[in-house]
Image (cartoon, rainbow over all chains, first blue to last red; front, side, top):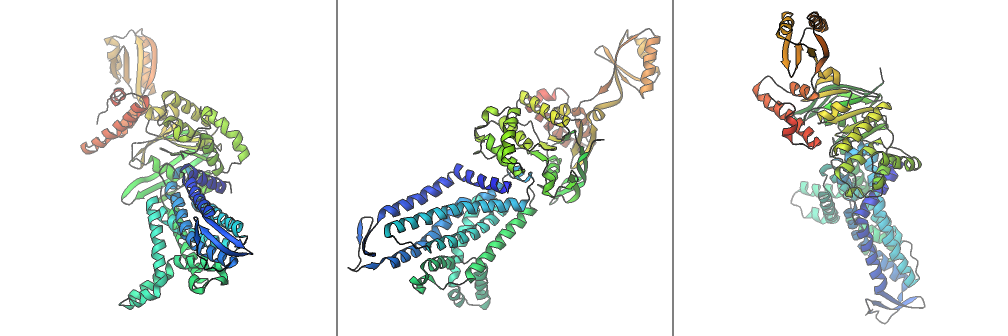
Length: 284
Length: 340
């Protein structure tokens, strides 16, 4: 437990010293501030009678809009945005954790302590996840507070987006850790993790891709990749669906099933397992 | 006999086609300062890394306090100072000791007491709140020593502990290590610096190409069997001839005699001859070679090709000593000519 606490403190101190933590929270705060100042809502009898965005009036078609529906629509749409931004920021802020740990002259200091390699790697991973989680809580919590303050609508399902984003971050971080353990390079970890995010999203339309293949074996590879890789596009849609619930059209959110979560979790576990296996066997 | 704290049997490490260690047997006891010597690539660091679980041996076994080194629990009472260690620059000296103390299982309350004591011991008390990135190389080295000692370990493994430290600092580190050994700790020092090892360690092992080429106490390794220095008066040709009659080798040098004898009885017989001829014995002492002589002899190979590597190895060691002493390689080498 002391080792875990030391690792968490070390990761946060390092993030602060490298300005990662500051940049992480300044960027988030800037975004929140702009959002808070930009949106001006004219609410009459619990409904939206008018709205201004960056000082410009938003056309309402002369009708009053149901405020609950507006908040749900906004927050679910915003979840998709946060899913991409939050994930990218988190990968950027944590990808150095294993390469820096493995640097010559540093790893000796850590492994010469009575600490197993797996607990060391796991505590580093947990510390990175905690760093990412703190930012997600800050981002989503602040936006939720601003929306609640401006509309007086308290829509708690927005926080479900945070859980989905954190889940995606956990899986991508496991992949980044695996690459970091193998290559000891922060740059390669970041690039490959971003590539994985986009590449996996392509396979959301795997049925169309399979249909376009000339041979069955090509289609089988596409299908295989779809099942093996994390479902980054589906997770984004799941965040929207979870926040929107029944209030948004199914076409927008996609069907919400456990499958993307289960297969993505399996991918993450496999990546972390591989990282741990390689880390255990490595000579330093 | 003191307890065996570090034990290694048949340690072997092969990196692809390179054999870094080729069957090392090693024992270090409590209260002992043990030196591991050898040129670059001899296997010193690999040995230490295996003992710490940083590198996995290809064959053989090693334990600390009887616990196999593959078990992290074996490192519970071990302090390690790696060569070229890099503490996070954003941490202060106090934070550094706190992080590594907690990783060794120390409670915050114990650390609050221990850290100021240790910083004072390595003369860094005024730098407790300063970030490590501002430290000089010598200061980082002293902080590394404090980090190795933070949990009051029973075993110390030190890789080039005086690297980058000025002469006064080196003396302080030597004193500190000797004090730790007197307190019953087992200290293994891995170094290039023959003079440092000679001044600090009670026992050494010299590694050559992954094998132990020589091992023993400094006295055992440096004693030249059957060579004595005699200072006597008067010394004349008659006396020398009388000595030579017994089969002794006699050489006059700077006013004293260098004697090559068969054994102690033989040297006693020479003393008797001196007295019967009316001479007085002023001084009689067995001749010793320096650790450097032993080292150079070990690396003096029989064939021409490997003599080059021996010359390089010895020169490397001497250069290390010279750099540490703040002199040029030539000056250090001047104390003993390096010949293939």
